[in-house]
Image (tube, rainbow, N blue to C red; front, side, top):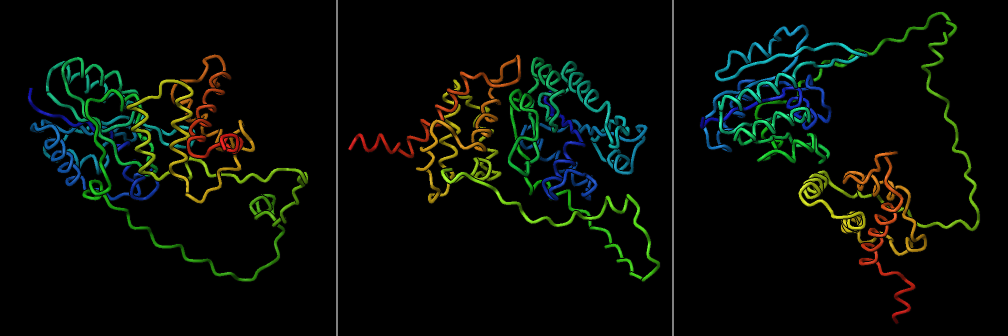
Length: 344
């Protein structure tokens, strides 16, 4: 059937939107115009698929599966169906149950019944991967939408990202069409201090008092210790936009081997350093890499499946190759001093 359907994980959409606008993934920080939201989703889906909208499915959770006011508002909107999972309290926090299972069931049912030609999935949950694969096997084109992340990193399962037929990012302008920050409540009135009887502090009072300021201790160093400048890490010189582009590049073109992974990291790091950064002194510690940068390099490499199954660590031979690749990239930018002298 030449129609499109939108499946929305409300927890993902509203949490990511709150994080984008407020820097905090608590959806209570937002005031949402649900009619404007449904209209924005419908218009965007029809524009991107070129097909008329059949329906928007809104998946959310509520205590005892009882509709909250926002769910009742959504149910009155045309072409919007609400599915509720349970919201339970566990270990001091709210946990939703049954939402991903309901989304998976709806996803596979729509595909089996050929109810749509294109399906838009607005979620980040990797548990939906089997449902996505099933839909594709039944000839449905799956569009995966993400809310623009604050830090530039993925806020979705990388397996979902890799499996989707089409991907789009909903930016701040899209979110601001239907959401705005909730006005903060009135500030608490400061208590008026009145002198009273002297009270002996309880252990609880003592525990909550700020610790006394302790002057920094002296640090002993050997007189022969080197003072090699500590360069910034890649994360410290990478903007959110660059971080997003890096993840996109890595997911599309995975480096072939450990040495190449190290070289990709090294070139990326070098290209973003300030031109006044002192790099030549790093050769004095070769083949060692500054500790923070080395740890970041190995974490980057671990994303490409180089962890040994037995101890969840990168194999020693691969670590040597990763670092060798980094130094190869470094030598392209900063020739080794002793080799430069030899050539002269």
